[in-house]
Image (cartoon, rainbow over all chains, first blue to last red; front, top):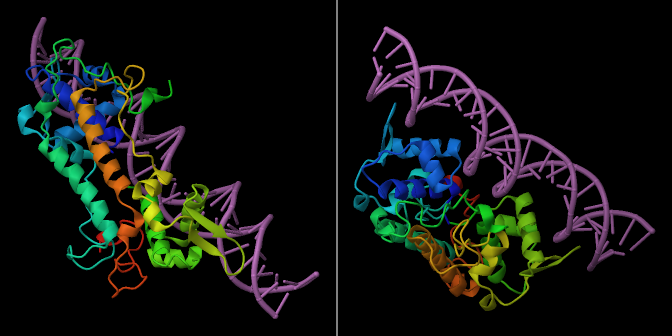
Length: 152
Length: 152
DNA sequence: TTTCTAAAGGACCAAGCTGTCCCCTTTACT
DNA sequence: AGTAAAGGGGACAGCTTGGTCCTTTAGAAA
């Protein structure tokens, strides 16, 4: 559905949102989200360039959400890493999105549209667990690298 | 949404379905679907192993749908190439699909479930254009390699 | 000003996916 | 039999992604 990279980004954003006043370092975020440390810093860079997080160097620095969590949609985060590919253009088709896709591509686009809509309608604050049994810790108990421990 | 490979597979299946009595060679299918010739034959092999198409070697051979188009779902075709990844297991989570995903993964799984359902409910015959202006020719005018002519 | 800390960023590696090529096997037709 | 037409399948090239590592830059506090 979404790439590992986008998942890491989402996990990091949610983690930041769970304690908005505290800056978190890439290392802390990597621990909290189960993402590889070195890779996560790249992910955070991307989020920074996209304006979703602000970063502060030096002692006591780290990352913060650039906006309150209720003003950030899942879609925004995902699209930093992978544009949701709609099929407006019949692949090789006419200029612009001519109104007649073939049935196959219409269905494929419908599916993409559903996902896009779902992501657009969900804001980050809706993803916070208000369950105080796991305060400000990743709710799914340290997920680990994406797709990691399925084999176990 | 789906990989180029899965798209090629779908296009080929739909093309076969548009004239179920005629065997089509990989070359013909490649032309009709705009897929690279050499690659499509790999795709067709996969569809064959999955039991969705039957193949016949030698002169006059080619590929045919193994089942009538109304008994083949889009999901079946897509899953030959890429399993729709549901998130039943909290990545690293408890054994089995414990009933409590964190809100993030619940949302992600919801999206995957929507897509899966949409694909499962659509059969190949629903994708045939009954528009006789383009009889048994790819409706989107020779799509070309996936993602091809967007730059143009 | 120095020093410590943390992000920024580049170099690099491994794996997977897309795609090409070429040869082998099977089949039908003459 | 022989030959041409078709799929089967392996080898391999190129690109993108995921991931590691190391150096550079910037900020804060002593």
